[in-house]
Image (cartoon, rainbow, N blue to C red):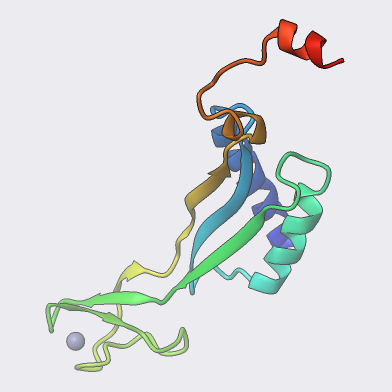
Length: 137
Ligand SMILES: [Zn+2]
């Protein structure tokens, strides 16, 4: 399955980035996927769950942002969004869409990390002293 290898490579890239933030948990991964990237979102979501299962990324959300195909028409001198991927023609003049500017993307737009709970619950960074811990018991 095509989407399985995509999910695996995203997991690799995200894990590499997250490694720079020890203790942080990956909450959401945002993807930009062009209409021509031939990625089936449902399938990718399914593969994401399988691939992240049992890893540090388990339970993280994969948010897919779809990008329409954008072509640049030399005759009109403008960039236009194409309605679908069936017709590669300039919506203004009907000229051929030889210069595609967007639509093949498959990239990570952002990774949302959640701070480690331990760090968040100690705003002052004040360590619990051993003496206090002993006095309580
Ligand atoms: Zn045109």
